[in-house]
Every structure is written in structure tokens, then in C-alpha cells.
Image (cartoon, rainbow, N blue to C red; front, side, top):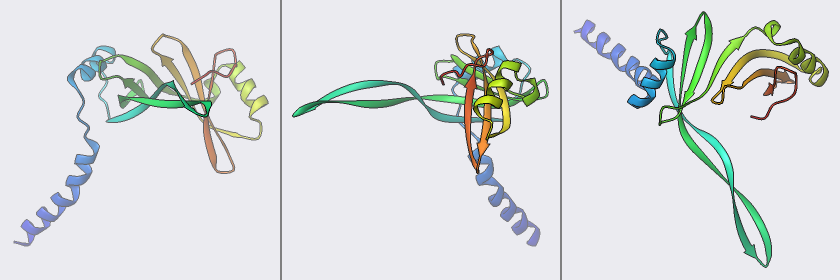
Length: 165
């Protein structure tokens, strides 16, 4: 009886953790993942809302005012190991790959990016780096910089110019 209660207790404790890690991923998203990364096994899937280009709505209340209306779209992100490096891919519900992000050693950033970080973020410490391949095939480099306990991500082109998100 004690063994049964112990087993029951352990199974109840473990169940919420297992359930919380599962995300219902549409088949078309899984197919896009497997087509792009046939040998990878995703460690985790998560569904998130991603901001989309803002649309503008106009209102009048005596004078003319513009209000920005933010919209978002649902996307799925898989995080996994690829060639020994942490990688993530963002896929739309239609199966379109929006971006792939792969961890990169800070020393492996292009020289122009390292120079821009040293020049423009000299008071910051670079914590992490990654290569991002966007849907259009363009490549940007992401650096996570920290100062006084606050972190932010900064994107650069290979030439060391800051890139838009």
C-alpha cells in the first residue's frame, strides 16, 4: 500500500511538468520543421504571439489624432541542438519559416560587429551572440549586451551596422 501511495504521489507531482512542456503543434508546422531539419529532434516547442508591422487607425476628437494599432500573429518556436549548438526556428501556422537562430561564440562574430560593439556599447558586457537567418535569406548577428543588471538584444549586419528587428 505504501508503495502504491508513493507511486501515485510521484506520478501526480510529475504530471503537471510534463503537461506544461507539451504544446499542440499543427501538422503543417511539424512538416516544415522536418523538411528543414530532417535529423534534428526538437527539445521544446512553444507557441507565442509575435508582433506584426503596426497598422494605423485615425480618430478625430476636435483635432486629428493618429493612433498606432499593434497586431500580432501566432507562431511556433522549436528549440533544439544542431551540430552541437543551440538552435531555434520560428514557424508560422501556415508552415513558413520566419527565422532560424543559432548560438555563436562571441569571438566568432564578424570583426566589424565586434568593433561596433566595442565602440557603441563599450560600457556594456556582451553576454551571448547568435546568427539569425531571416525568411528572406538575409543574415543578421544578435548580441545580448548587459549593463547594471539590464540586458538587451542588439542586431547587426555583417558590416557592423545596426539592423532593424
